[in-house]
Length: 214
Image (tube, rainbow, N blue to C red; front, side, top):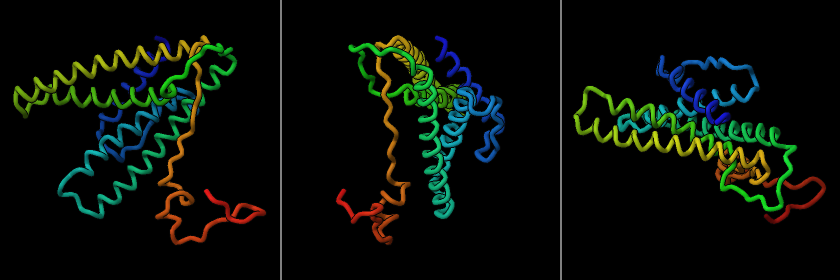
């Protein structure tokens, strides 16, 4: 499991590094060379980890509304960064397998490799935090037991997902699975596509022509 072993090692490293301070504002210290796949994987999980804790904080029922709005903006930015990184990781795989001769009988997968890797990154966070709950001292034995059951399922899911990702990449490398990537077309951050953002702006015309219908 060449690729997935790398993914799991880096995600675990990132999660553990973050929790040395457990501070959403602590600056990342990415140990990998800039623009390498290792660098992007570490950065991807770090962003996921920070966002995990942002999502916890914003659910505080006593949070100040102004602070909550600032957190919501930060979470929106984090989601865009996560999406951009997924596309960068998919670009790495597209380049890695660009010379593979794809079989005429090759089939498509429901998601690209990087979106599966995205799920694996989140799964590492679920496992870390469920482990915390399964061993938390200031709670009941029942809570720890239930958390352990959930942790066992998450660990099995990690094993299955890791194998599935490795199988997918192996099939792509052999040309029996076709890699086809669609760029995410998020609309709510785009001032030209979100009606709330463009509502007070005059419509733009294509160069050299009149306004066209969608």
